[in-house]
Image (cartoon, rainbow, N blue to C red; front, side, top):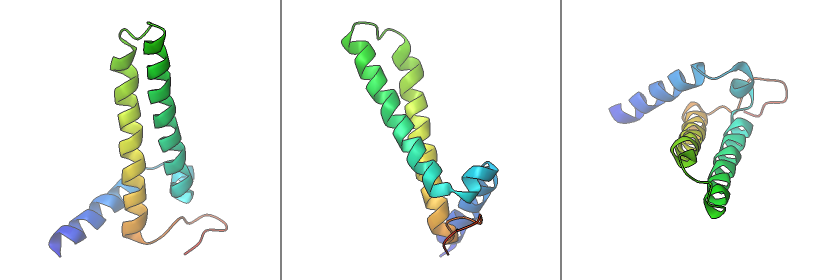
Length: 92
């Protein structure tokens, strides 16, 4: 039980770090982050396909991983707090 409470506190702390728009629309922002991560991986594959990969993978793959991680954390934070947002039209 203590681990679950600690996870809720950590997720709540994560949501406080979010921008105001991300706080109001966390699921939308998480989906956009997932799409950006996928796009960065596709871009990396295309660059390598044309033989232009080089050091781009060093930049693009960690950036994609960061977007995937932040999207995952945002969805976990929403599930832990039980709220989807506080803006107009938010569902509770």
